[in-house]
Each structure stands twice: as C-alpha cells, then as structure tokens.
Image (cartoon, rainbow, N blue to C red; front, side, top):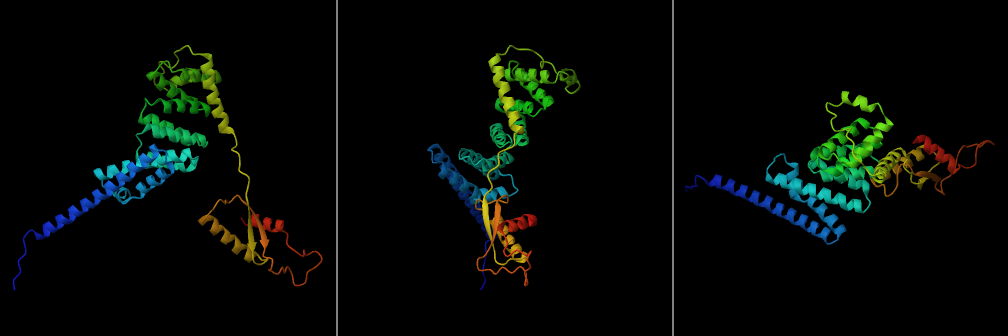
Amino acid sequence: MLKFHGLNESESGEETKDEEAVLTIEAKEDNAICLHNEALSLVTSGEKRRALFKFNEVLDSPFVKEVCQSTSKDPSHTLAEQLQYSCYKNIATLLEEEEKFSDALDCYIYAVEIDKTDASTWYKLGKLALKLRDFQLARKAFEEGFTATPSFWPCLDQLITLLFAIFDYVSCLYYIKAAFKMDPTFLKGHAIRDAIVKDQPTIKEDLPSMFNDVSGLWDTYPCDEGLVHSFMEEALSLRKLRFQVPPMEPAKQATLIVDQPTFLALCHSLIEYYDSLTSNPDGRSFSDIIKVKLKSEAPLLISSQPSSDTPSEVEDTDLQVILMVIL
C-alpha cells in the first residue's frame, strides 16, 4: 500500500518545534519579570526579608540562569542581564541595611561586573568598601564611577577626599582640576588643594611637568573657615582610620576529643575537625582556641615502665602546645 507525505511536512515540523521553544522562553521570561516585580513591591511595602528571598528566586529562575549562560546577545539576553543587575543591586542594599556588609559588598561587585555604566552603584560600592577599610577597592569604585559619569559629584567628592587621605597628592590634584572645570567654586577642592600645598610646597613647581595643563587649578576662591575645617576633619579622620588596627574579636574556644593518647589519634581528630570546619563552619574559625581532651575511658599509657620523670597524666595545656605545633 502506497503512502504519501506532504513535501513540506518536515519543514513544518521544525517550525512547530521552533515556535514551541519561543513560547517556552517567553513563558520563562514572563515568570522572571513577575517575580522581579513582586520583589520590588515587597521592598516598597517594607517586607524586606521576603523581598530578599524573592530577588534570589529571580536569580535562580530558569530564564535568568539559562539565558545568561548562553553566548548570544539577543534581546532576551539583555533583559536577563538587566534583571540580574537589578537583583544584585537590590540584594546588596537590603543586606547592607541588615549590616551584612561583606555579603553586600560581594553583591555590589556582581552588579558592577554586569553593568559598569551606573555611577550610583559604583558610589555605593565605594562607600561600603570604606566602611570595611578596603581603601584600594574604594578608590577603584570612585574612579570607575567618575569614568562612567564625570558629572556625578558624589564619586568625585569622595575620591578627592580619599586620595588626600592616602597621601596621593598628584592624583588628588588631577581630580580637583577636573572638578574645577565643572565648578570653579567647588569649596572642598579649594580647601584640600591649599592643604596639599601647605603640606608639600614644592608640588606647585613640580606639577607642570606631570600635567599638560594646570590652568584654573591655582585660582583662589573665598571659602568659609567653618567649611574648611569640616572638609579637613573628614579627610583627616579617614586618614587616621586607614592607619588604625581594626579591633579583633575575642577568640572562641572549642574542645577536641581524642580517643587515644597517641599522635595518630590526635592527627585523625584534627583532620576530622578540619573537614567539619571547612564544610560547615557554624560560627567557628581557624583562629579559635582548641582545647584537647582525652576520652575519659581511654587508657593513658605513656610507657610500659614509667620512670620517676614520666608524667602520670597529660595536661590539656601540653596537648594544646602539640596542636599549635602541628597547625
């Protein structure tokens, strides 16, 4: 029996599959957008913990994960990156409000890696880096923010203060000059410029060999003494903070149980403790003080024929010293 097939049957089948794929992507896209809008609504209504979870749902959504992993640069990819950027930026803000500064810093970094053109995000990253005393990262953030939008004053203002605080006077004057081009009456620029010249008088003579154009940099402008004092107090307090040793948290104490009074048993216990610490820290750290104890039922056999100078028991402090040597 003869069977006939349409000439375009295979083509129409492929078209149907393509259409189904497009519909699937669109459905995933709509779902991600809805989740994102729900998260923004939760932030507006003050339900910030729920918003945090909802933003993470967007990041874990099939649309964002699948599209961002692809190499194509179609409109769907652009939308997925926009959603990803918005989520990381909002999550960072929420974590910062909860004083989870390290996690917030990571999210700001993820955000600027996706979109380097938003000066406000660079500014928030720089301010948080200052709070965590990461002056190098703060400088990088403020510089990138200035590059993205030179007219965004918060980045330029903070960058000038920071560069003065870390004694990079040449770079500081470079950005003061850039500020004077936009606003010759920039009072902080005048105050810090005068402080630099007072601290390093020869820089006025050396600068022409470093800059092609220094016009406008040395123009004077009357500035209120109270404002000058507040500008310098901010910069000098930042300088002082840079050289302060951050306070250390008091060391915690943990107990390590050893089955037998042998180095082999001690090593096994240390390895188990290390594996536990790396897989699930649970508030513990490598700087904790570890008190080593023997199991109460373990026989303490130091020697088959103990002499007078052989201790009858091993003190905890002795085992702590052994532990420190091994670590």
